Length: 329
Image (tube, rainbow, N blue to C red; front, side):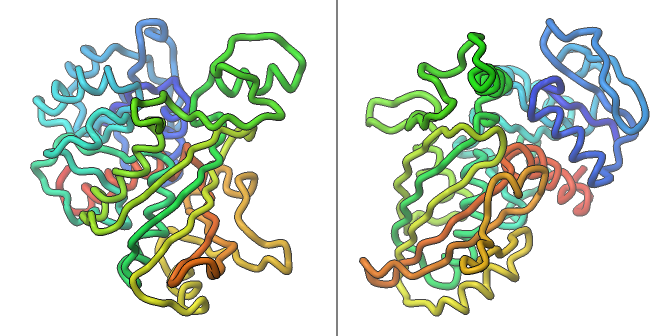
């Protein structure tokens, strides 16, 4: 299968190549696509070397699948052009996520909504993906009413410039800045841009995307998103209020048997999810599961995942795997 990776030189684009290779996706020909600054550069994949091409050149090569991670403007302008030639686009930007005619998909949760006619498919926000992987099975069992989430997000979620800023500050160097304040030895309650309602775009993605993925507006979500000085892996402190009461052992059993979720919940043995251990993994890790005694039918838990893998690249490749399995590609 001819597969284009748009934004191949970026952090997510590079992980997309890793995910395609590690999951043995049947790529017969790779079409690496990037900005004009990267044209003519080469990338290696599956023992072969490929030359980076432009978006128009990629369309002329007629890929069957295109994985996009090059920002909202590129996705807005070019995803429809790829779709017009029959190519299926899985887009990692935020542009198409809340479009009423575009599916927003986490395969373990709602892949069944996909059809052969879906030529542009949206990949959710990284923090959303790890949240719904845990929230969806709990909601199905106990009916969530209100969710409070505070995120602790790594600098890799911002991109290469932010990773360089953190490493420069650790080394005592004065380099280009991705953030308005130092990130080393700091925490910024500021992920993405601020909106008129006082929330950031990241926080509003967390408030709205899970409802679309789960096709359910019966619960509400309030979020605070914080950038912390870790290089990879997002963490979330989550409080869920349910309609029905729950048994903690039943909750642990439910999550421990949820595909794509790994239970790490032995606090007396210092065993709980941490971003350093989630790095490079495709699964979502959950622990610190405990009853919230301040409110009825309420649960606290801690969720961690690699934001570049399950939070972006792996989820996109899993969508493609589902389409291939259903013979939609």
